[in-house]
Image (tube, rainbow, N blue to C red; front, side, top):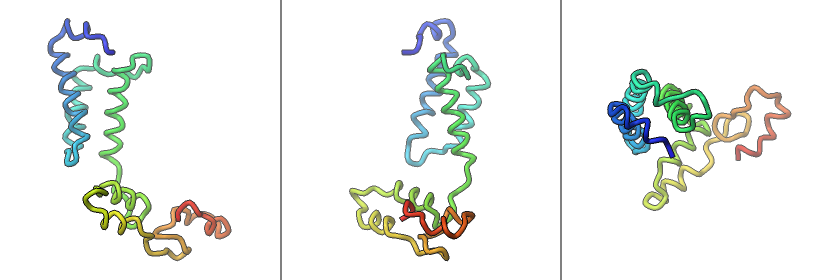
Amino acid sequence: MENGRLYDKSPSLLVARITFEYYYQYVLEENADLKRALKFMETLQREFPELFSKEPENFFAHYRTLFVQDLRLTVESPEPVKGSTEDKLFGISKVDRYYEEERYQELKKKPSQGSCGHPGTCPAQHLPETNHRRHSWIE
């Protein structure tokens, strides 16, 4: 458990911590604006550096730092290539199996085969042909 005495000395630090928790929970919502959340969390990181730490020994502050870094990577990452395995996984993850079973089964079907015989875009295009055809993990 985090040391609460840190917040006794500075009410503004307590409000900053509560604000961080709000945005931490907010990013888990389905239609969350991740860029907005990242903007607020980075502002908190600049204005209240004592809430964050790069030292692993300071567990809670370090965890907050890592969370902001991971959120930044998520926001800045490019969209997956259409038809790629990553695109397919994102599609499946957004379907509620209980209410949309038919759509879920449709997404699980094999995509059209690429020129190498593998489904969709083969991630191993750069490999020699002998290794290229042996990717059973794709299927």
